Image (cartoon, rainbow, N blue to C red; front, side, top):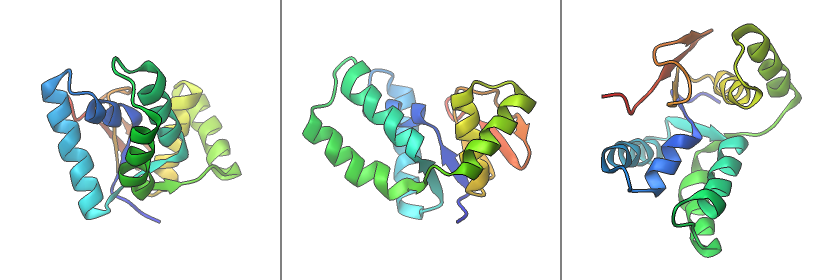
Length: 141
């Protein structure tokens, strides 16, 4: 399985929360394009982090039925990466080499395993190259 871009959780948080209008608009475009093109993916970790934030941490939390709808319409169609021993091993290698948190290392390992060339996130350094992956912060002005 190969997708051009891997989308991190923060993009979906801005997609759900319109407090920051500029970031919401950017996230809306990313998610819309990903669903239309099928050229982006996420992992089980992104699904879990997004639902947890949307149900518990958001300024206006989603109701369970809203979360289920978002899961079915947005998250599941993009979810391509399941947990595996290979991804966990690669995450440990990424963590050791790059000194990222373990959870950021899992995101990177999943993106690499999916064959992605870009990681869309605001959590890592924009422009950083990690093996064949380039970090891109879509929210930079």
